[in-house]
Image 1 (tube, rainbow, N blue to C red):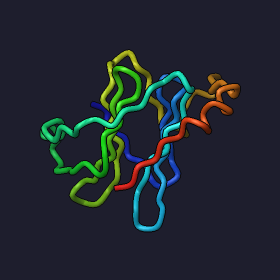
Image 2: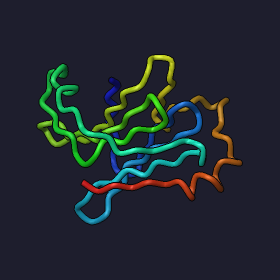
Image 3: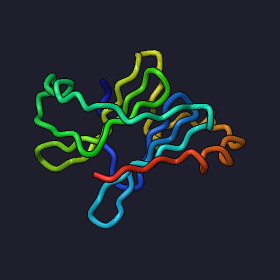
Image 4: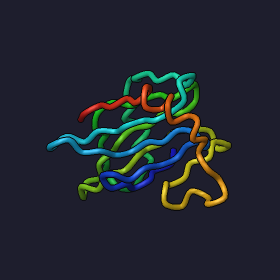
Amino acid sequence: MLIIGRDVGESVIIVDEIKITLLQKGSNLEIAIDAPLDIEFNRVKQIPNNLEKFKKKARIIGETIQIGESIKVSVIQTETGLIRFAIDAPKEISVFREEIYPKGKQIDHSLKRQITHKSLRFTS
């Protein structure tokens, strides 16, 4: 499992075509997932035991979202109040913070029309 710190408005890019952004609406945190139409999303049962292997105490906020067959994303909060994405994916899946996404690579802009129809948000 990969833990990545994100502030409101910051994103991660997964497998060059999925963008996950942390949003805030009032006092609620949300995530927006932008991806091609052929990628499925499902809410899955949270497994709190996954967080036990980390030194800092953390709790899952909201729901865990499964993207495709092998990627699960949760928003967690540390005991100090910091917000993190917990991304559970196979090692061969590339995950980048948006600000360090390789400059030579670009997300396929033809997906943009599809992405806006496939956004999913959940509140905590």
